[in-house]
Length: 173
Image (cartoon, rainbow, N blue to C red):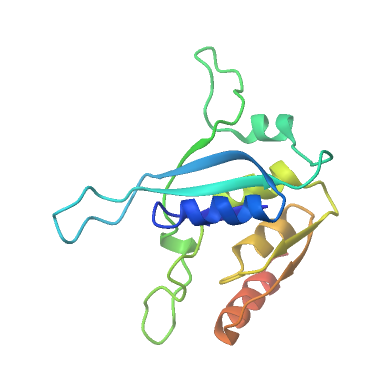
């Protein structure tokens, strides 16, 4: 299980995960390379989110070599390095950011970057495995799963997000 959270709720998230029998293996820090500025000018700019990675039994999948192969960080001699628990990636924007055609504003407030989700999908599942996203939003997890030959189930309460996700999925060849 991967759960995205901020410093506001990381305590509650970790406690809830432990209460239902999961073991936390890592807390990944997503260091945003393009964070939104602090509009109040009274705090530091919030430039990170956390991703709690936890497992429930002793037979979990962790694809070390795949993660090492996709890690953009290399050693001094250019060799692949193991994936660390700090991921330096931008927030989702540009062509990947889904916009509302009527307002030209982001359709979902917390759309995740596909590269961010791809790391979790490739790291913790194998081809043809089933990936579940209970809070699908704009469908980034489903897109990453489909592009990487995984099956998926996605749920969301908002019909407009389900429509966006379905449109994104229909455009993948």
